[in-house]
Image (cartoon, rainbow, N blue to C red; front, side):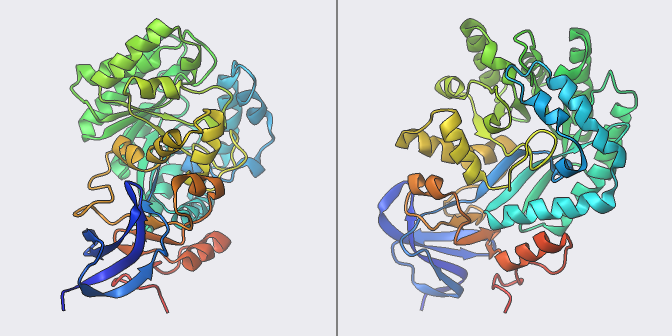
Length: 427
């Protein structure tokens, strides 16, 4: 008879051995067995039809409290942020901050639900989500993101970042607000040191963020050097602080767009520091005209991944939490168009992204948590070509119901769980 499983996937094609179709048996949220033939039965059976089955997608960077706010403001910030040399990036941030004067959890949560439900449809099961905490936003965004984290638990896992968007030294009270957000239940401490006015203030910003992270035993995410200024060096300061505090593997840097202007010798030094700090870099080339030197970092063995960054806000007008779409866009922007490079891009929105976020037990292997997508295509090239929603999304061993996610998108309201406890789709 064999064992009985919660879910059995048949006719699955895997990236590492595409010529052999396999079955994948799932129970108790875990991948129990992968083999050409599995003896036993299952509560739910689905067929991949010979198409690709991979790990689900991971979004390492999303300003989730800001989603869909572009309609609430003019496009002045967008124009400044997308200027050719990004020389007015700080001005763009200051202009974009105006919307936060209207921040209230009651309307933010509806936008957040729509964005996270899109993630559920497109197979993105993990998000590192930034919530601004400052004199304008207060804790309204953080409250909304923490609420959404609990609502979508088991469908889309959200790591809430308490993010000091407007600085620490230049923004009185921000340090205290970050601590309050951590007390509310935020998961990660977030900073943006390059926005400070002096090198001394940048160093102080980094120190304060790491102090809070040590106090609450949390990881750190920082937006670094996000402008067209080759003199910006906050990524180096962050890496050195990580090494000094023996926090290897617990820091994640985002953007680092000034890196595009660095001299090669300094880039080599920086890559060495990043590896010593075991520190990943999240790049979002589609949301700004400059970006980190992704291909060179990869050549040096630095952990690099991709993020959505923004969805219809002051910095980027598009986006739908579709990480396959992000990889497709960046295949063009980074000129990563060979088959090998496409496979690397795919890793950058799945396994490498999960590693950067510290997601445990992630992978398509026996014993790992069953976070998977069943695609409509047979290989990565075709998956990138169409970048459509997967045929099936599996989160923590359970099928995600796309119709339930669509209902959330349409209403902005949270209603019923998207799956029943046994992993079956609702009738």
